[in-house]
Image 1 (cartoon, rainbow, N blue to C red):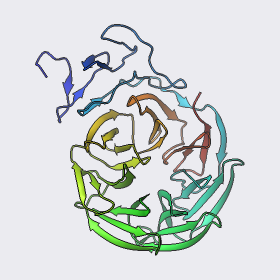
Image 2 (cartoon, rainbow, N blue to C red):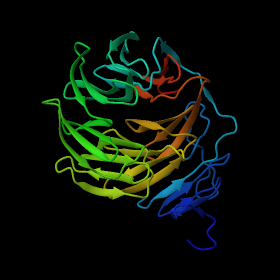
Image 3 (cartoon, helix red, strand yellow):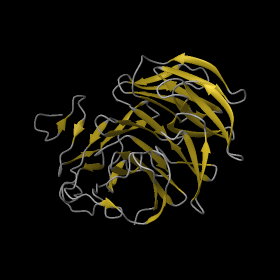
Image 4 (cartoon, helix red, strand yellow):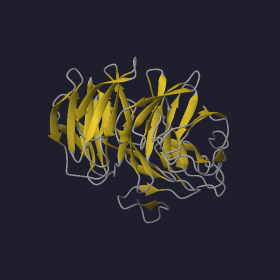
Length: 361
């Protein structure tokens, strides 16, 4: 980058675009909006919008080299009040909404239970787990629902196996960490250790050390690999066959990692950024700045990122933020879900999950 290049760079040497600037990469023009969208450094083109968003950004193309794309937030963000179909109530600190087995599953964090919602009727059934608290991760595999729970606050943690045909607990394994299901096994990571749970026997079959201890970690299964995220040590790709680390991506602070089985993204909660991982090169593809990022869901070609009172909508094919919405006061805080024609938004500090028609119009 020459001294006359108008772009700024971050500490890693990646380009940071200011509003109204653009530059060519091959035949693709990358740009960041102020109040208008521009094409080939001058021609005006309409911005990409979705349901009166707080922010609209023109499409950006992924690159073979990492890039940081930023945008200028709108001074008058849109409050998400539209298309509210239903409210699921009488919950206890609902921390997530997760779709599986034809239902929405909601862990009641301080209630120590799991609520199952039938989308056709919005009827809710509470499944008592007999524990102090639940984790915010619910996964599905081997014909079962799996959820992490604490028998007592901040002490021993178990993973419970629930039969979705009877809503009863059919297994319990003492193991601590966040989980993901893939390759026929449940993968649980905590404090640098990755455990493999064999659902045939409801036992931990093996545990390996992936990295050093880290307070903020996550795990996901995508592109035929296990991904272990850490905020201080980077992102690790682990072979599900050998449990050996295949690659380490150390130029990303990965507080959490999530995948739909193909796409792999990480979240840096401290800086409010989300990063797409190029799984072919085992490297950072593109990092996007948001107003707030804690966790995300991938549904088709759309990524929805939750961060406090904000929902960020990302178009995956163009790797671009197309909209941001501000939740109504007192809502949000839990992990959202898109399923059954709706966006499900948990209010972690309250007792409700809002059901909002999707796509947002």
